Image (tube, each protein chain N blue to C red):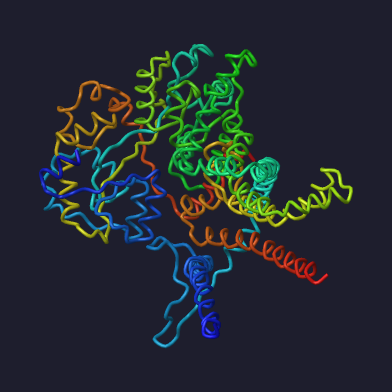
Length: 303
Length: 324
C-alpha cells in the first residue's frame, strides 16, 4: 500500500503530461506560428510572406515586426462588423440550441434506462453521416422547388414557394441542427447524474414541481448549461460552411472574411492577424468566466 | 483516360480535385505539395510563376508540342511569356446562361446578347424575381463590367474600380446567388433564370436540364461587348518528385485523340489544333464551345493583378456581396 502511494504522484504526472503535451503540440506551436505570420508582410514568394528574421550582416540578426496588420483591422470597419455579426449569429444559435436542447436532455435523463440508451443513440446518429452532406440535405429541403415548399404547396397552405434558402432563417436552421448534439450531450450527462432525492426533499418542504425545477434542477444543471453553450458558441462563431451554403451571400461572418484574406487576397499576414484577434476576443472572456466560476465554486464549498 | 495513360506508360496516376483555384494556389504557395502536375487557371498561374512555384518545361520531352494551336499559344503567352512553364488543357469563356422560356415570358425583347441583361438595372430588376446568379470571382466580374463600360478590363485604376462598383451596387438588390458552382443545378432545375457563369458549366446545366425533361431550356450567350477567355493550364511544380513522369503525362494529354476525347466529355474547347478534326461535330460546331472568329476577336484575357489592387478589388467585392 505504501509503495502504491509512492507510485501514485508519478503516475499522476504521467497522466497529466499527455494532455499538456497535446496542447503544446497542437495548440501552442500552431498558435506561435500563426502569431509569427501575423507580424509579417505579404510577398509574391513561397511561402507568400516575408521572413521575420533575416541576417542584416554576418553578425547581426534583424527582427522585423510589422504591426500594420493589426492596425489595419481597426481601420477598416469590415472586421469589427463581421466579428460582431458572427458573435450575434453564434449567440442566437446557442440560445436556440439551449431552448430546444434543455427539454430534450431533461426528457432523456428522466426516461427509463432502456429507452434512454435508444434516445442517446438517436441523438448521436447524425454524426454517422458527413457534416457537409447533412448541410447539403438542407439545401434539398429548403430550396424553392424543394421538399418543404412542395409539400406546403401540395397541401394548399401557400400558392408560391417561400424563399427560405439564402436567408438568415436557413442559417439558423443549419446551425441549430448541426450543433444541437453538442448542447444535448453535456446537458444530458449532467441531468442524468442529478440526485433525485433532492427533488423529493424540495417537495417535502412544500415546493411545487416548477418551483423545485427553478430552485433545484436549474442551478444544479448550470455547469452542464455552460459546457453546452461553450461547445456550441465557440465553433459557431468561426462557422464558415453553413452560412456560405445556406445563407444570404451578404451575411458578414468572420470565417468568410478570414477565408477571403487567406485565399482571395493571398494575404497570409492579415489573415493570421484576423485569426489571432478572434482567438483573443473569444478566449479572454471565456478564461475570465472560467475563473469567476471557479471562484464562485470555492466560495460555495467553503460555506 | 488516366487508365489509358497508365496502360501506355506504366505510370500510376493519383488524382485530386480542388474546389477552387484559390485553394490550389494556397497549397502551391505553402510548398511541398507532392504533386507532379497541377492544373491552375492562367490568371493564377501567372502569379504563381512569379512566386517561383513552377519549373520550366523541357520541350525536348514534349514531342507533341507541334499539335498545339498557334492562336491559343499566343493568347496564353500573355500569362506565361514565351510559353515556358505551361501547356493549355482546356479553355472557355465567361458568359451568360439563361432560361429561354422564362426570360422570353418576362420580356421577349430582353437583350440576351448583351451584358446589359445583367448590368443595366432596367433589365436586371425585371429578372430579380425569377433569380439572378453571379460568379463569386471578383476579378472576372469586375473585368467584364469594365469592358461593358468601354474601359480596359485589366485596368488597375482605382477610379475605374469605383465606376465598376457603382454598377455592382445597382445590380446587388437583384441578385439572389453569388457562387461559383451552385448555379449549375439551380439554372438546370429552374430556380435561377439568368447566370453570369463559365461556358462549360452553363453547357453542363443545359444538358442536365435536357436530361431532367422538366421543360427547362437553357441557352448560352457570349455577349457582344466581349468577355473573358480563360485557360486551364498544365504545369509542373518546382519541387515535383517525378518531373520525368510529369512530362510524360502532359505529352500524353497533348495527343490529338486524347485532347479530343477530353473536350467531347467536358464540353470545353482545347488548345490542340490537331484534335479539332477528331471532335464530336456537336462540340466542334457549338458556338458556345468554339466561338466564331468575330466573337474570338472580342475575347480578352483575365490577367493577374497586383497585391494592392487585389486587396482593393476584394474589399469592393465584400461591399457588393454584403450590399453595403
